[in-house]
Length: 222
Image (cartoon, rainbow, N blue to C red; front, side, top):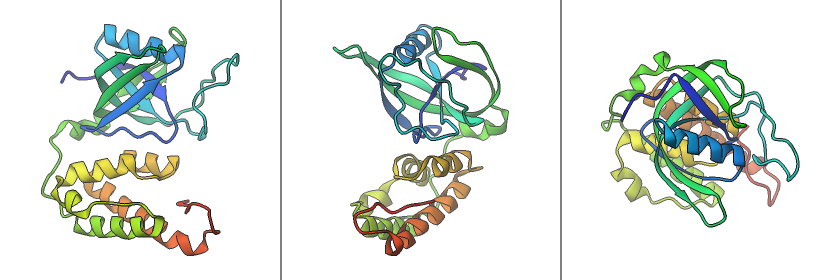
């Protein structure tokens, strides 16, 4: 896979995490982000996934309202578009593969409505290395099973034990129902060991939150 460019179009999306080597499916609705994907496809097919600093419950603006350009975190992850399909209603369905995290250096004027930034990959040079498969994830799986029992989320422990350590840690970081701030912390973790340690903390917080949660309300992880 080619190195992502230093000038990167970004797709701000609350609560969505992409990590190097992992896959992320996305449906693209807004015209400006359709333009982003089309322009990326005409070039090197890389886009940057990043979160707004202030969480946005609905990432799509109401009809007739101009889209906002919210402040975003400094760190995101570049992904390569491996698949792009246009649906009958005009939406695009894409499959991104994470390549490398980046830190924003500066931002350029809008192009066809979407945002572009200059990025620095140097702090995350290790993202290009093959993820470790020899990590001990037994404690993580045990914590996940307790979290699942407490929050009525089914997990297949046998299947999880068969996964390589890096894939398990990154996959859980992307898919578990944590808040945007927790997702950002998982993204910015220095490496897999640090990410696994943070996952253990977050899973423990989720388990302990239930006794204090009002009946019928979801557990909080804040």
